[in-house]
Amino acid sequence: MSRPIVIIPARMDSKRLPGKPLADIHGIAMIVHVWRRAMEAGLGPVLVATDDPAIAGVIAGAGGNALLTRADHASGSDRIREAADLFDPERHFDIVVNLQGDLPTIAPESVRAVLTPLSEDQTDIATLAAEIRSEAERAAPNVVKYIGSPLPSGHMRALYFSRAAAPWGDGPLYQHAGIYAYRRPALDRFVRLPPSPLEKREKLEQLRALEAGMRIDAALIDTCPIGVDTPDTLEQARDFLRPK
Image 1 (cartoon, rainbow, N blue to C red):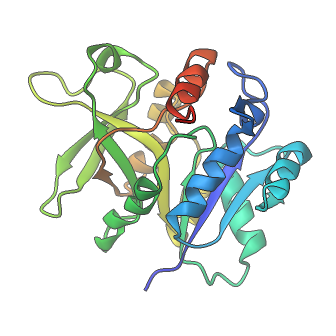
Image 2: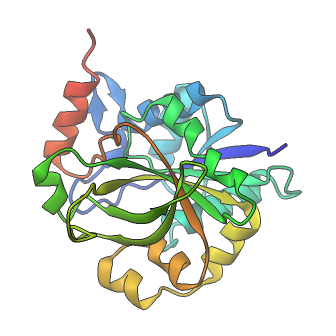
Image 3: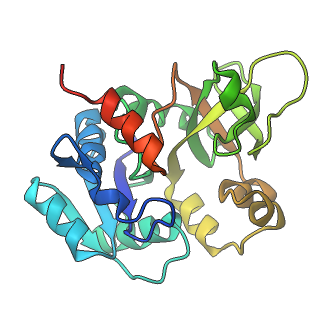
């Protein structure tokens, strides 16, 4: 049986929404909302990996576990790899779930669902996608599109990720959700790869894995969580999480 660990990378240096992890959502920092959803999923240990003592302090105050990592990481994947090695140097945990710290509305069942594509032995990395229902989101470059082929399991094997409305023609488009489950060796390999040409062009880190021949499969969920990266999306998250 697999043993997963969930790691949430968080840093304060967001260009479009400075101080994003500590953004207030009904009296609770956004990073705490994400940590709570991960805890509710019940997959295994949940860590917040950060280079900022303020973020670590907020998580500790909520009863969580935070690890201080280096400040010079180029990506969240590098940060979670460092955190995994610090927390589990003997590698008892064989799957590392990278849950982005700007998804306060993610459902615990979606966090659990990200593991299911790893039932395919050849899958290196698992993720989530949902059908796009809004015409505006089909064309929006900040809505990342998942282009894949259906598998007999009901999952989809990734062929490409794009900010463009792809694929062309009649049929559904799928939005990618910002969560990954890496087999531990796949994470090791991924962070050693240099940034790839398509990754740099689309500004999508996951293309590095595809260009290197790694396999990414997605489980389909009903709706994608709100990714908070602007004041407008922060307000959307606040509306979604408003106490009833």
